[in-house]
Length: 201
Image (tube, rainbow, N blue to C red; front, side, top):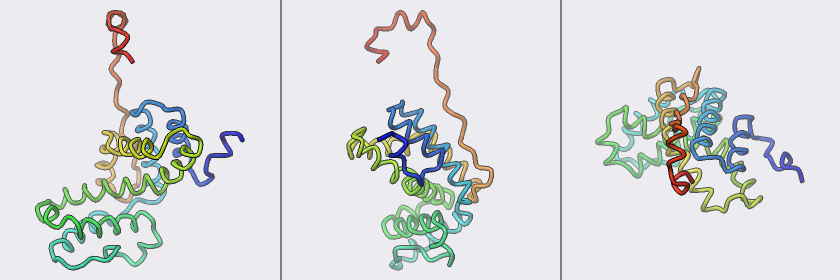
């Protein structure tokens, strides 16, 4: 069966690039760049979570009140029809229930950043990793543990962290772009010639 037949039709072009990068076992930094671009494109197309700061504020209020929070933080009536807002409200409910003391000591910007990181991860899984993972596992490219480690490493990358901060500045996602790729340090030919091969691998 040709490789193209195994690509889920629901993947957008940026997420297909991520799939190819993972299939080809490209370096982690290169794959993280592809994921960051895919996330930025996804957030733009779904119009982000415009009320992200408001959801973070309600999360802190819920944590401080000590009330039992349902599976979703109460918020906008349309949240269930907008996947990113639903992901944000569910993540906020989880934090409000499990991180009360931490949220009490956090400033509003810190709480918003904490929530944004969780939402970015949720969106990465919803729009990309959950669709890519079964393809890679079925092909035997990765086992389940390797996939989990790979996805965690990508989401912990500096590129995704920078994107999260950029997104917080414009939660609607309008005009959001992936941050500039990390510059690779070029080594001189003389340095490479005098470096043991084991260090280059």
